[in-house]
Image 1 (spheres, one colour):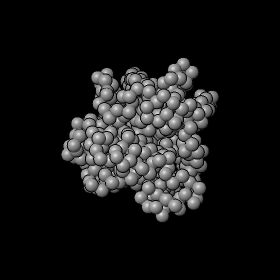
Image 2: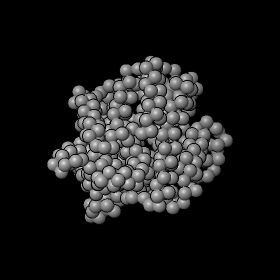
Image 3: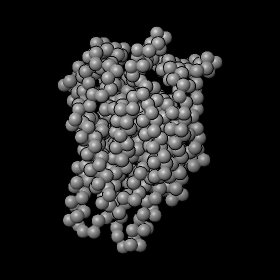
Image 4: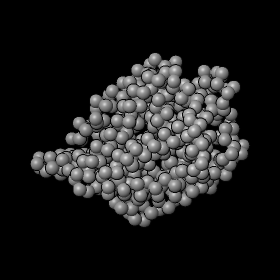
Length: 446
C-alpha cells in the first residue's frame, strides 16, 4: 500500500493520529471478523429460527461508532477527498438499495441491513487511510489475523461443543466433525481462513517471514479441517490465477469477468436447464452443487415476480411469507438463510439495476484500476494482497452469499472485499499521489 494518506504537519500530531488509527484499525478488524458474541450453539432451535433482529445494543453501538471513528480519523488526512470513489457509482447504487428497501414488505429489516452494510463499506475504505506505511499495514493485519486464528483454535481445543459441527445440530447434522471455530458454519470458517492465508503471505513479504508463515500454516491447517473442498482448492488456484492476471494483461477480463460468468452459467444454469444439468453430470461434476440447485430454482422463481426491484435486503429468506407459504410443500429450500450465490442474492435484494451497478463496482472499477497499475510497470505487495482477495471473493461468491452482508460470521469477507476494491484504486493512483506530494514538499505516508 503505497501511501494512501499523506503526512500531517507535525511529528507529535503524526504519532497521536497514528496511535488512534492503529487502535481503530485493529478494533474494526476484530469486530467484523469475530463480533462480540462468537461461538454459536447450533443445537438450539433458535439457530434455525426465522427471527432476524437479535442484535444487542452494544453490538449496534460498535457497528456505528467504530466505522464512523475510522472515518473521522481518515477525514483528518489530505486523502479525505478519495473516500468512497467513484462517488457517482456508490451514490447511485446505495440510493437504489435504499429505495428497494423502503418499498419492501420488511422495510425495517432492509433498512437496518443496508445501514450496517454501508457502515462496513465506509469502515473498509477509511481503514486504508489509517496505517502510515505498508509495513505498518502488515503489522496491523498480523495482529488481527493472529487474534482471529488463535481464537478459532482456542475454540477447537477448549470449546469443541461450540466450535466443531455435531450430529446434534438442528439444521445440518451431516457436517458432524468438521471444524468451524467461532464461526456459525464451516463454510464461513473456510472462506475466512483462505483470506487470512493471503494476509499471511503479504505479511511474509512485507514485514516478518516468521509471523507470516505462522499465519499461513495455521490458517491452512484449519482450512483443511473445515471440509471446505472448494475453498481448499481455491487457495492455491487463486495464487496461480493472480500471477496469470498480473503477467498477462490480455487474460484479465477473460479470467475475471469471463470466468465468473462462465461458472455462473454452468452452475446456476444447471438448476434451470435439464440439458445443462446432464452435461455437467457427464463431466463428473455434482450438478446440484451440494443441493444448491433447489435453492437457486426457488430464488429465480421469486426473482421472476419482481425482476426490477427485488425484495430488499434481508427481506426474502426466512421471512414469514416464505417459511409458512405454499413453497414449503414443494421444496426444502425455504429453510435456506441465503441464496448460496451472491449474484443471485443481489437480484433478490435489488433486482436487475442492483446487479448491473454491482457488476460495475465489483468488476469494471477493479479491472480499470489494475490496468493503471500494469501501466506503471510494477505492483506492490499490498497490491498483490488486494488482487488475491478480490479474485477469491468474485469466484467464491458464485457458491456463497457474502456480498452486502451484515450478519456476524459473514462480514469479514465483505469487509476485506471492499478493502481490496478501494485498495486497488489507491494502488492505481499511488504514483500520482507520490508525485503530487513531492511537488508540495511533503512526504507521502500510508
